[in-house]
Amino acid sequence: MTIHVEAILTPKPGRVQDLLANFERVCPLVHQEPGCELYAVHTDGDIVIVVERWTSRESLDGHIDGEPLALLNTLNEGVLVRPYDVWFLDAVEFGDPAKGRIPTLPSAS
Image (cartoon, rainbow, N blue to C red; front, side):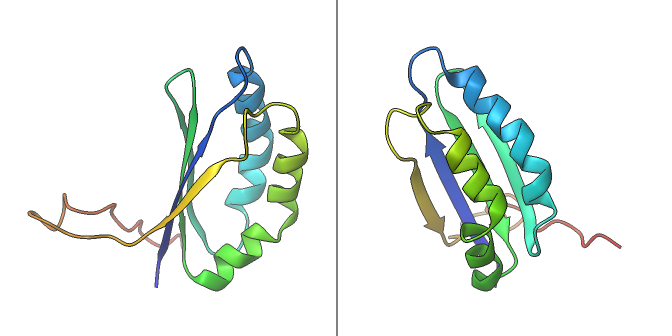
């Protein structure tokens, strides 16, 4: 079962670029973690949103307990207004099935 995660991080004023630099450093490590299907960082210039997809709860738990996230948390010390908000989401499909959910990526061969 695929696990979808959304996280919102709110940096202190003037610190969004520091936060993005921290993600730039850590994202390649997260992308190599077992079960990572998607770990994409987005910003509107004030907040940072991370969209994640993991192959299973076990792979997500490995990420939560893993070195890349520990490194990110260390790098973000003093950068954030508050701890980040995280949601674990289940898709609720309405309308066109191709447009009503985040698509599954093809497997890498």
